[in-house]
Each structure stands twice: as C-alpha cells, then as structure tokens.
Length: 108
Image (cartoon, rainbow, N blue to C red; front, side, top):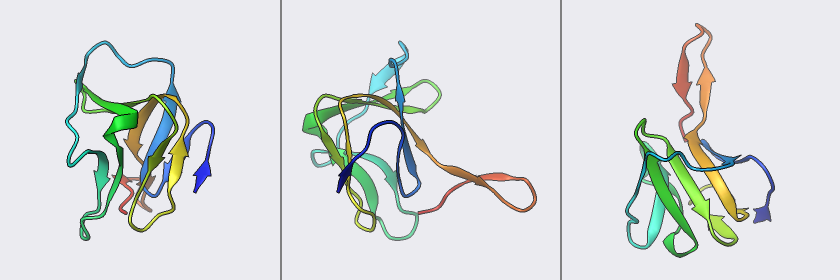
C-alpha cells in the first residue's frame, strides 16, 4: 500500500486531482458501504473505497468526481491498494489507442 500525491492510477482507473467539482453534479449512492469506481468485465472485481471517508458525485456528462475527506484506501481484488490524500479527484477509466488509431477503454 502506498500514499501517492498527484495523479494516481490503479489498474485501468485514473484519479486526477482537480481544484473543484463542477456545479452540475449529483451524489452517487454507495453499494454495501462502498463507492464502486469501475467493475471488471469478466470477474466482477471492482475498484472501490469505503463511503465513510469520501463522497462520490456524477456530472451531467457521466464523469465521476471524488471528494476525499481523509486518507482513503482504494482497493481492488487484483491490484495493490493505493491511498488517496484529502482533496478532489476526477475519476476516469484509462484509454489506449490500437494499431489502427482507434481509442478504447483499457480493460482490467
């Protein structure tokens, strides 16, 4: 487990610090006391954090924003745990370009 300043990647999920959340967000509900950032396509594994230390919001375009109140662990069943410092983060699924120049989501 490591605490990292700045942009943090865990598998195919990328947490990028931002100054503030857009005004047009709505809160997302936790599942079983956890916020789920992304799910594995075949295994059901997921990137998640405890809902008690942060708040997850979704903007009109479907982009997630995470407000971290205190050190928060992001866990995944196949990746090492990362710890986010307090602040606001944009949550994205990383993308890659194939040999034909087409962009697609990185699959975990």
